Image (tube, rainbow, N blue to C red; front, side, top):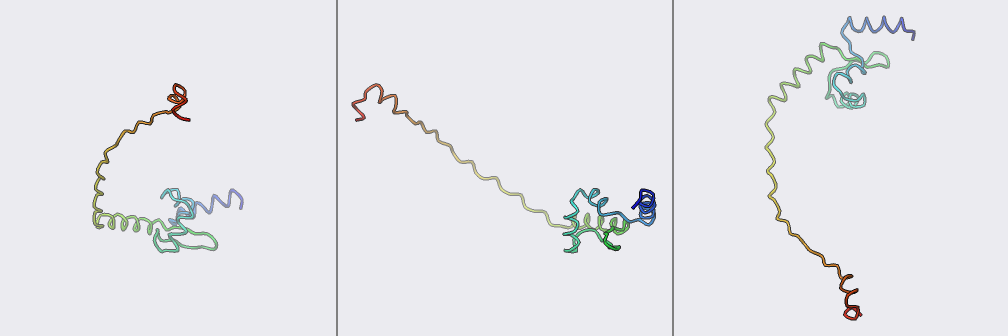
Length: 109
């Protein structure tokens, strides 16, 4: 596809309110693979397949964002985890017996 055709196509997409998969992944800061997974699970923003490419209608995206915000506000708060009690520490001293063996070798043999 030439640069001129690509430029025209991008302008038309913008005029009718479609975001490309690359644009949507940049907006949401997720990978294209994550978007694909969301599409399969019917979890992410609504999408449209045109030929081999996937696009996201901007008006549907705005609605989806609003529903995400509402779900987060309606979701019950997760209880805070209790902090684990502190465990007392014990210092262990290890004596190096090599020094004793050098001072009194008969004690070790």
